[in-house]
Length: 92
Image (cartoon, rainbow, N blue to C red; front, side):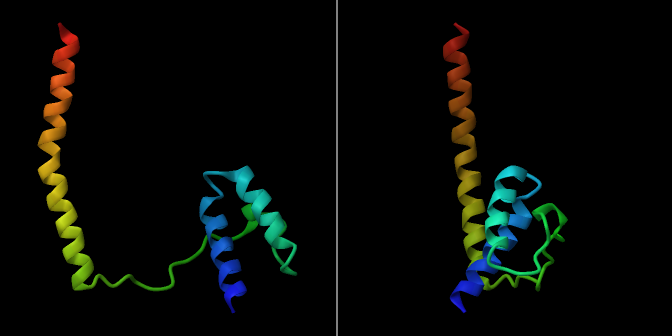
């Protein structure tokens, strides 16, 4: 069961990463293909993984996202100030 889950996770990761890292994912896929009979010849012939279900945003996740958004909004002016200070320092 655990090996099957790991195999499926690696296979899905390969399919998602293939457009961005084609050579790496092809090598990884060819090694995965050795343990699975009937697999496609190349990772690039495989279909892209489909969404299994909708992600439900529970209240705890929503609060976490809200807190993160609030912290980012607090930090943004400090970052702008820092960038302006650096520019002013080197402008002289």
